[in-house]
Length: 373
Ligand code: CMP
Image (cartoon, rainbow, N blue to C red):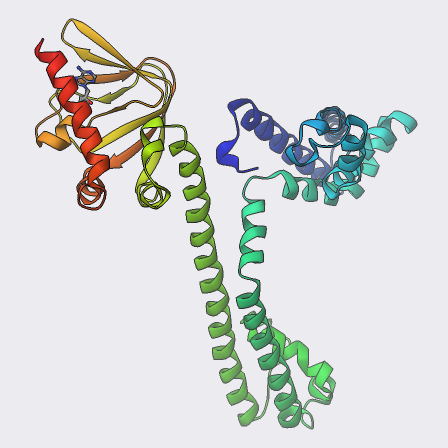
């Protein structure tokens, strides 16, 4: 699931779960240190027991709600649960509760000791549940052909440098460069610019080769970093686009606009969340943006009168249309999700989507008329 689309409760559960995993990993890792005070060991064993019990409760809860998982909705409850239990996530979650099951069958000490075996599984559990891991996996998937090309380049340079190093250094240092597989260690350490220094070329030509391999290594790593950075930026932009598109679909004002115009608008909108009682617009301030209310309620303070605006309404358009300071305070009545369009994009849209801006203008005129009454 896209973390941005998670509800508050889901976000809290995720945070508690991540904390539980981290506490478990720290306590089990700490328990493996030699010479610790018995009191610490006892504490670590208790913490490990509590954490794995927490995982057991979570496993049962996840198993119970498996029929609610969107892609399992078409299956019967039992089948959904079996499908989830046999999925990689279900298997990892089940293995993560093993210390608790071991503790239940063999006493608390057995649970604490066996937990060290499962610390790896807890790290895996953290990887499957941590937000952002899905994003990383997606980026690697999207960029697989570019990453494959960079990996091929890496392998070509690795093997050719190991082969040349074997020719140049083989006679001088047979233990390190006597064969191509032996020379591969030096090539890998040099190409990745790790440079342990345990194996170094002795001949002048060997050192020259070392310099070239280092430069190639920096270039290949820079290439990889560039591919991943671009992939991340692209994926984040794409996800943000889909999220805003989803929000735009909930604003009826946009429903009359065609898909191409919406795509144009979506790229310019930024979503913002406000708690209840926040001031979104202050009377007299310069107009920097206008807002579309996706969910929640805001109050427009018109002197003694208060006008309520709800889901789907927009506000903050007058200052942009009239190029004047804000005409009223606008505050949130309930927590609100709002789409913001900044002034530069507003004027650009006015040129590209005149019907959209005309509709905003008509509503602004109506509002001015009601104010004048
Ligand atoms: P702006 O003047 O930029 O900032 C205050 C906003 O309150 C204004 O734009 C309108 O969007 C909104 N507003 C002002 N008067 C009314 C009204 N009578 N009814 C609804 N909204 C209003």
